Length: 580
Image (cartoon, rainbow, N blue to C red):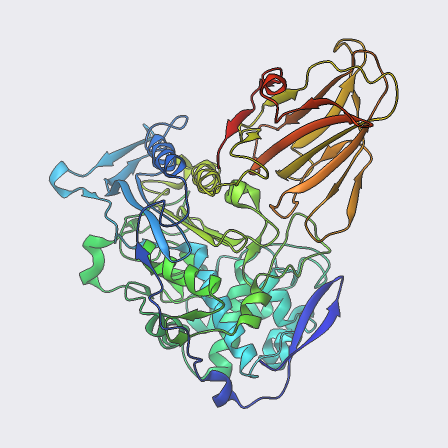
């Protein structure tokens, strides 16, 4: 691809090297296989039970949650590999004709004018649109027309006003430019004046010193793309992404003929909306994008669940779909690489958010990439398990104030993560901690006599938890459970070095592989040993698994889970046996 790696604030960045743009733009042949097909959960390598629960959880949010429905309806899509194992519409695409602010109720259309969700319902993606703009930018980095570390002002001289001369393309893609979140461009009367407002906008802080999510970053990137290519953003989207990938239901400004298949959004009126527009249906919801003619770098793309799954599969396959390539593998790697190592908790690749439990739930890993949209949309890709999730809801229908938080996205992601089986390390079953929030689960061995000689515990351990918030602890008690002390242990992953856990705890990301664990136990005549897994009330990871528990003192085996009599003496509260 002609990209050279350079060090950048503890992370990696890539600067484009001179290349023949025409050659760089030429598609590389893929394997020719269809990108996606419908199939069963088993064919996708998924467990069917959690996928059924995913739908049940999503349907619960059609009811008051807690006071109003989170969305009027949604389309859910989940898959792994090349198989879409779940593609389910729920609720209504069009239900309300207005919002009554005095009674805080929705005024429904007559039943014969309401429209149920369908698999191919088209949604206003809102900020998920930012991913398309980002992909278009990375394409131009491939072709040498844009450099990642180049100042934006080197392409748009007027952008350098008001202290923005040091803002780079990377800053825009990673939301570290210093722009504030947004400004009301829709109050400027002409397109040219809106652009001038972006150019005149001063920064809230120096570039590269903080993470601050801002629509202005992607609007600015749109202006760069249109300048260097000589094409409008909607033309770039069609020619560079949707046509090559066969995404026939993805575009800006859908035609009027699409309206019956589009999910309605908000009864947009002041004061909750910046513009008085009435029911927004078939036009972009975002006020700034609307004022920019419906074509904007931060919002405005409409799409359906299947098209987004095609995009997800393309990226998980390294930028190729069938025989069409839109990005090279190195470019996709850039999009899934954290450039914000200086801002823990705000991990971000080029355009893609990374490792965000607040909507990725248990799918979140350091490599999991995705984005959400204000209208109720989300796309999540997990390269670790080769799985993908699309949640498209019309959560601002009839009004944005009815929607709070991101619970339906988290619930769906948790169930898809749960659907990816974890194979036991040594036998047919393993102990599983569960994935409940605000919970404590314990797995206790019977009391053991470790008073003479060194007793060692060994087992296989697998964990993936919300870092720091959810913790797995190995602990022991010599007084019958009145007090407990942590037991330090060591883990080793396949092919890896030994890792010490001096506090007796495991938390965060471990690679979703089994680790061999050893621990020296304290000496006591009746030592109790247990695993304790605790979670907070917000988000969870995939949980923890323990397999093959054994305690040995010299050549004597004090406990061996493989012996039925010993296994029967384990006490589990919240843990269960799972086959994977």
